[in-house]
Length: 183
Image: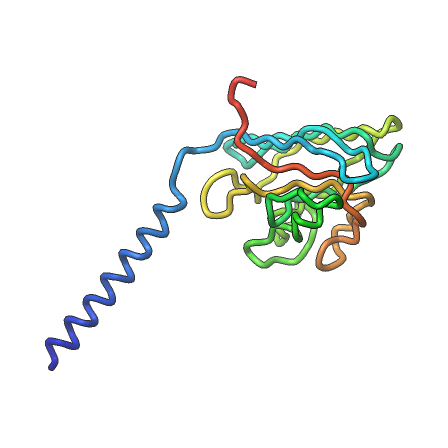
C-alpha cells in the first residue's frame, strides 16, 4: 500500500512539473522587436494615425502620431484587453489591458494597468505626437501586448479615477500587430 501511494504521489509531482514546462513553452516563440498599430476612427470621429512599439534594453519605446483630435486637447491612450475593433464605438475592445490586476494610474507609476499609456497631447492642428520608453509594456512572453487593441479616447485621462481614468468615449481603435522590420 505504501508503495502504491508513493508511486501515485511521484506520478502527480512529475505531472505537475511537466505541465509547468508545457506552459512555459507556450510563451516561447520568435522574439518581436517591433509592433505597429494603425488607428482608425470610430463612427462619427476622425482620429487616425500610427503607433509603434519598439523593444529596447530599457523597456518598450512608444511612438505615436495621431491626427483628427481636438485643437490643444489631451486624449486618454490605452492598450485594451481584446484585439477587437469591430464595434462602431470600439466597445468590443473591452476594458484596459490589466493582466496583473493593478489599479488604474499614469504611465510612470509603479503600480498601474499594463495598458495605461497616459495622454496624447494634441497641438493646435489636432495632431498629437508622443515618444517615450515604457518600462511596463512587453512585446514578448506571457504579458505581450501584441494582438490587443489600442484605444484613443475623446477626453483627458485623469490618471487616477478607477477603473479607467474617466477619459470618455472611444474615438479611435487599432490592433497591435508585428511590424515589418524593413519599415
